Image (tube, rainbow, N blue to C red):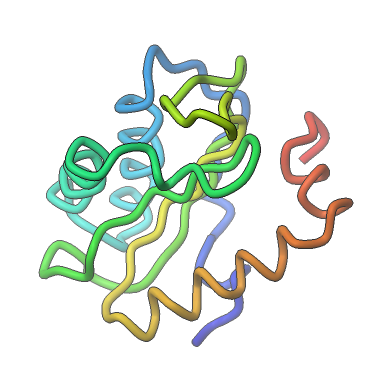
Length: 138
C-alpha cells in the first residue's frame, strides 16, 4: 500500500471546517475524496449510512473519527481525506466526543482498508503526533 502521505494529497485536507452536525462533517470529508478523484458521491452516502446503522463506532479515540464504508464500486481508488473541525463536534460517542479530526477513507478492497487503518493507528498511537494532528498549526 502507498504511504499515508500519498493517499492524502494536500487538496484532500480542510482545516477549521465549521459544520452543523456529524453528517455534514462526513459529507465534508467525502467531498474531499470526490474532489481528488478517489470516490463518487455514493461513497459519502455509504459512510453516513454506516454510522446511521451502526452508531458512532467510527469515533476511535478522543477527538478522532475515522469515516469509512465497505469497499464498493463508488471507490475509484484508495484515498484519504483529513478534516479538522472548528469548533469540535459531538458524534454521539459516550467517551470520545467531541471530535476535532475526521479522517475519511475510501478503500478499493479489504486489504487497502486494513492497511490504511493500521497506518493511521500507528501514526496516532504517538501522543505527540496525535496532538499535532489536532493542533491549529497542522
